[in-house]
Image 1 (spheres, rainbow, N blue to C red):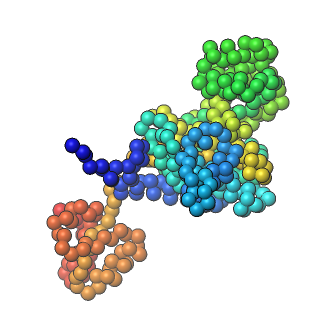
Image 2 (image 1 turned 60 degrees about the vertical axis):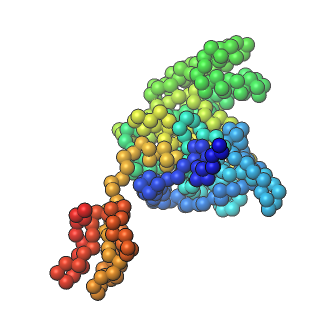
Image 3 (image 1 turned 45 degrees about the vertical axis):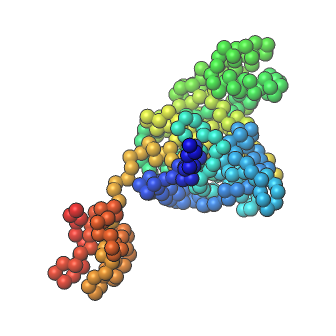
Length: 390
């Protein structure tokens, strides 16, 4: 016996967003974009679809694996559905705006992943973020981090843990060791997983100074005191000293009573993409970061125009899952027809910001399905708004 296909089913890890959740997401989107706007960040809207070589320029292998690819029927070329908006914004800065000084841009849109990032994760994150181009100093790193914390506070996230790292120490040590690409990749994987036994095997034949420094990195995590420890146990290579100086500056200027700042010198996430400070924000009760970012100066070079860059992204779906939903919708139910003046009253209520839903004739028994808490009624010869009674 054959079973008819369920044509309404969606692909795995893809889902519809129903009214209450959609309203929550939209409120978060507006709040965060408003925070970006008052800091001078201009909104851009990149396309969902791009030629593959442009979409993946300077992004590394990880984004390639996450990108859903297909053939464009108009050109015959390979195109991709964006898995990350950040490279697109870098392209806009490099090739379309073409400004000489610092540029502040923000965005919000859906991205599509070929595979989910983890169990229970959607393949359609709703990505919102801000990017600052054209400034290479720690001041722009601080501005971006402070903007991220400001945006999270604006939507009600409290007790943020901010984890800070820097790819500089690992890069400097790998360069000093002069290892081949395969060994560098293996060291990166071991360090990311804090797999000390594997790390010990990989560094066994390296010079003692580099070997001991690489083995020390997994333990260099904690509060600001970790930076002093790092200066004692890591070799004073110029890039290591510069990296620690940047983190010291951030530690001094980012201190907030409501934010816990931690450091992890083994955090080299996005090593082939990021070029400096990397950071992630965690909310109480959240295992996954609710916001991530860092410096990625080398992406601009891949687009043919070297531009220092730093920024962050937030997945609004993840953020919404952590926050309490908004209160029930407040709306007025108005009749379809009635005594004179009805249309003017409805228009005036809407002008004042009220949601007014006009009940179409013929469905009085379905009135309970319309979200409303008040009713527009004609009482004693005039229209007035009264509480809902049923």
